[in-house]
Length: 447
Image 1 (tube, helix red, strand yellow):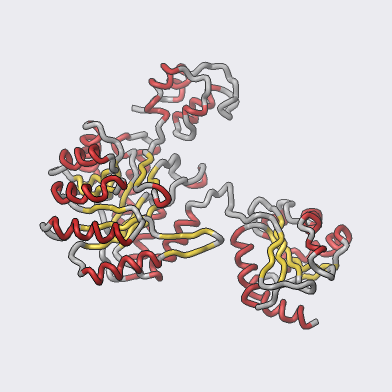
Image 2 (tube, rainbow, N blue to C red):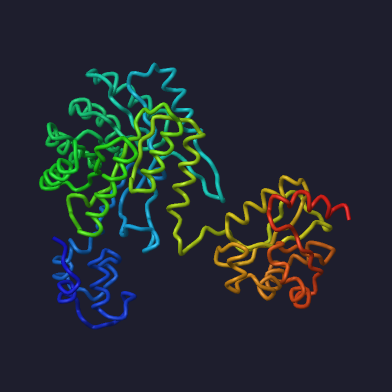
């Protein structure tokens, strides 16, 4: 059972040194009890206290790693129920399922399609995280052959889906050193599967017919000395997944119920309705799957899900931003237009893409606004005449062009007079929306 804040406080040095980032040891103890900080942040904690507080120092949801190296995926490790309370740390992993009964040519083509599911948005590459290989019959030879082929054709971590310990062992003889996720521990075979997970050091998925069975199985596996486990939500319909995953998350975060203190895996299944598949998967990403398994390679389904994942797992206190600098877009010359905007990534890429589509070479100066949008930055005093004038001087854009004309976003037209006074540049008011920039720029060059 987790310790209360007062119980933790009694074990701390009580020096109020503030080295942990909190004003008092009591405040630190309360945060530690709530899972919002780590005991490692207390440099003066004794070894005895660290041993006693081990359980309280663990995050309410265990961090489990699948795979190795560049493509390794971290599941769980979350501290809060709602993102605005702190943030979410480890984005939902997305796996694509392949079956061992697929003909080799069809399997190879599906793997190519998985590799093609890589997209760039606001300067960040979004991609699939794992390939789930499912055994469909009793023939372990076909399962092993599929594992070999997938490993040879994809660098992604594997999820091995079988409840046959013999087939799992045969597959692990090939890929066990790469730390695949073993999906197959149930009431009938959990001892054998746990032994395999221990032997190869691989994370293990446990599954049961309902939450009570899942809790019992989790306790059995952890009681057997293995804690790198993932919980398979016993549901497929979107509503059932939502209820089950929410119950698990609440019990782990609010009640510190250890049997549910692990990442959650949800299988979207083989639904052939693309809209329903996307809806179910989106529900799983939002509430609260650490990993989802899809049976589709349709970019029209996958791209929106990866975009949703990126948005949910962006730290609300640290917006995605680009470096404040002067960017040359196209092939700008000494007469090229000069535009300014904020360094919020979505704003930068929206404006940059429209400039590029206009086929007019231009310079885009981004002002450091801590990654906030134009109106937000203006309202908070981060995108005013002083900041823009400073950015024009700091980037030395005046040395790259022979004119002194700068274009500001239409929404902050009110800044033009004061900016002209401070910077000495002629200030032109551009369009309010980025979509209108191509026409504006073509008109600009014609003048």
